[in-house]
Image (tube, rainbow, N blue to C red):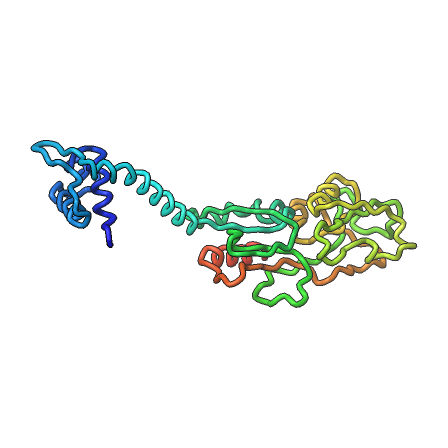
Length: 287
């Protein structure tokens, strides 16, 4: 049996106000329209819902029974509809903590200024997380070896190089006495990037210090604590400000694998318009 939602809303308001006129005013219709909707509902139910008086209406027993559930049911329906509507405006991005803090957060306001209708949420994790439908993640940005990644999913390549505080010399003859800062990835699936891959064990003559996060390595370098082996993208803003600079060490050439950032989409779900807007903006912003 089909029950009109408009008729149920009309009944709920009439029961609440004990007045067809007040219900009509709230729904911006005429009292006659309210009366017709309730009359049709009564015909379907085969039972009177109101006792109609000259200037007022009173609920019958059947009306009281129905009124006991209509308000809570309609409120619950409104809550679910609002939740669905708000989810259509939400954009959830998952990425690494270093990329979020050093690359995304400093510029994301530029995206939100152009798309105020989007409710952006950032989640950070170092894992190559498996995205499922119920994860509510629209897009993941991951760092790793780009070998084998489809071209359309590559955000940008990101070579690793040597950086130090502005007080350091721009060129060094060797690494003697230097603190060599590097990241020991929490995610063991990532290819190793270490000073040991760049210099011979017998020639390095420096002390390797390891951190769990790249942003920790960068802040150690900013504090003048040594030479950092880090992502060129993550230090870009610090280099522009003159706080960090690339350092050349004689006879040492970069040996990093083909690293960079790539996009991961939920399985079996087409990217929505919010994701497409974000990817286009981010691709241009990181150039």
